[in-house]
Image (cartoon, rainbow, N blue to C red):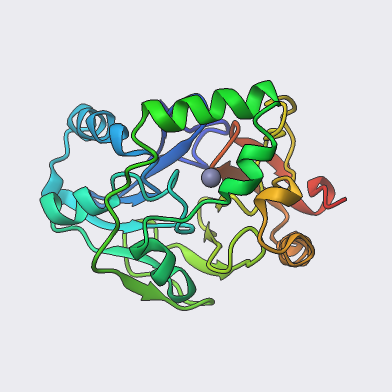
Length: 244
Ligand SMILES: [Zn+2]
């Protein structure tokens, strides 16, 4: 786990967790935690260790927010709900896919397995039980434009394109944007690069819509961007978003 503090004071209380390929996060506020995404099922062990290190228990987790219902983001969500009595939140357009276990774009993955980086990602999927997700059975849904009354008080911005249900979560007071897979900070096909960019077209359900959606994030300006894939990135979104 890394505590995300690329600029002192800006991101206090945010912790980056996960693996080489997949990120998820913990937000601390007033002695309670929000979990943002849940990686793969095997990340549960890491989750338990991280909250121990931070001196929290399961009962201190107020909410789990899912940026979208893909298997690499809902991995241990149902376990968190059942063992920790933690409510799971996602956009209503993702409920069906979540309950079906995530339904990733398998055809696109298979066509791109010749790429070494995609092949390595797929190996991690298998090793991390990403092909046997326990689907969430009970979820809460959030509306775009709302501010959630959970630790961090994130604003929900609906940014469909990667999936129908993709949202980003913005913490204005900390200038932090959890962007799920609306933007990555690495090229998913090569696992190189370190700037904000869209996922490849074969991973987006509607690539044009994904481009339009991220353009609407321009006005956020200077921000610490925390993606589902790639390293944290700090900068001005309006200058950095690559949508070609
Ligand atoms: Zn993802």
